[in-house]
Length: 165
Image (cartoon, rainbow, N blue to C red):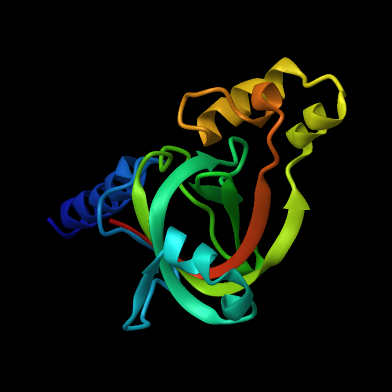
């Protein structure tokens, strides 16, 4: 009887480990989660970008893009401005299916890191098809900076935690 209970307990343990996947659920927390009381939206942060530089804050927005290989970063957008969110010390990864979901991240907002490479089309350089496709995601399905010759500004955020809403 004792051996049977041990076998059942071990089986339940292994089955619970197998049931977890890359799929995420609402409310799932990564890293240190979020704890600051005040939450700012992506547009609020970007509209005050210079004042927010170097500040630790809690930011809410929709994920536009996820690093496809490892979930090592996510990107959030507001018009022609993009915030690339990386995870502090690579302590955690974002689920690959988080694109299109609303998340809150907590961490340090950094200054902009310049124009996105596909803005090279504004200088008459050829824009590769891969960049055009990625750019359409940022533009919400419309023609992006590759076709429109517009520049997009990239900002960086180092998150110590994230929660999927």
